[in-house]
Image 1 (tube, rainbow, N blue to C red):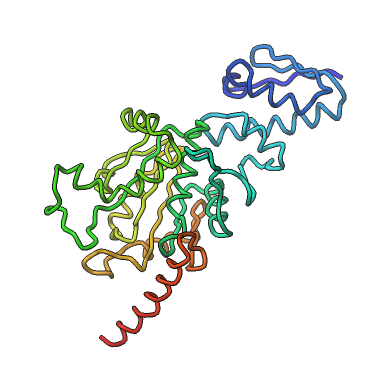
Image 2 (cartoon, helix red, strand yellow; image 1 turned 30 degrees about the vertical axis):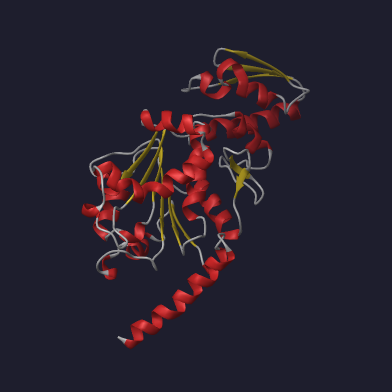
Length: 318
């Protein structure tokens, strides 16, 4: 049997890849089918059942291209590994990205896995819970994966510059030097996943941007993965300002810990109020971490629990 498949309204190179690399990977799953690419057409020759299966899978590949900026051979692997709905659904042992030391970075525990799954099904994710649960680290790993796979053009990481016991004016240096301590955890995570020289290049050309939240005002952030860390230190107006920066083909991840608010008045925090306002809207997910999800030193879990028990007692006594 012989059949021709025509690509309409899309550049063939976006599906076939440079040098037909993606197409070759795709065709490797059909060893008994002869496939010839001519312009925007594919000429298929073989058994009717093979051609029918090819058409189904190829339609999934084309549909996937409509949801992301660039296809890679990993998209082909995802489709043939059972993720045939146009989205990547990594299993609990799936590698998100490799660290600079070569070690694989994976979701650790059920809730981190929920965050990973939510990323591929939603454009806005809130990840809230105590310190040490890996919220920000996994979010950055997902962003680095997307950048390496050319699914996005930029990674933008931001935090509110709110003091935890210090005053910006009393810190030494210019504005950047004053703000860097607040952004250091983001630098640390990135340096675990991107070699130092490459990271410097990305930051120099704007592929990766790290900036305080105030610098987001007035921007439209498209084709980017944008992470707002320490969101408990934003008020409702700031959170709205940030969320309305979302442009086309963007992913937004908001992380925070409602028990570690550094604002002068705790009730000014807009994180939980913002989640309450937006929960239930299609395309938005909320992942809630608990003390049981802490992946740092075992003592961290005990420390968090001790403080959680003490704080309600202090409120009652006031």
